[in-house]
View 1 (tube, helix red, strand yellow):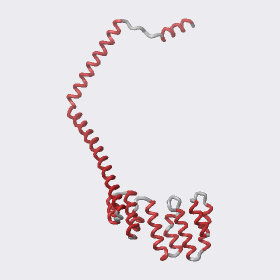
View 2: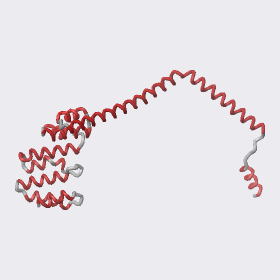
View 3: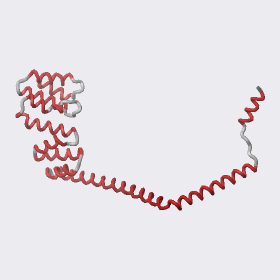
View 4: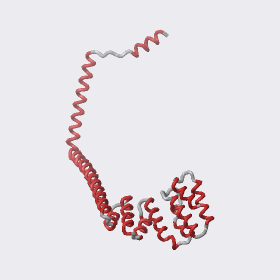
Length: 217
């Protein structure tokens, strides 16, 4: 048993190299570095055109990305400046042009602001059909319902606003109040009270909406 432990102890001890072995290691490293350098030089000589092309391509891509980012930023700044100028000058036509030449929420906002200035309902209809954001699509629909609501029956009015009758819409409670008001206006108090009671009992309903529902009761 003691012999086994002794052998294990000897194995765990670091092996000391002789001077000749250190010299061999140094020579090996030197030769290996020379070989690597020679291989590298041969590789570069053989493929230098490809390497140069790759470097140039990478530089073009990097420069292109940076230029694209700058142009995109400049375009955004220009749109913001044009929007600010149009709002300050109450220029409905300029806002309409901004909407046509931009995208996303910026275009939706510009077109809606343009409608607020000239009251052209066609712009609301455009938003209702093609708005990039749900917020402005639903907002346009609420305004159209308020404008044309008198021409609709209570049933048609509720049907028209049915797409807004979901908590996914930011105007869910407003739409419900509008439908309840329409039912009241047509004398259907039972249908109106059902909606109003649901709003009042909804713990997630904003306090102002609950207050208005209570007033309509």
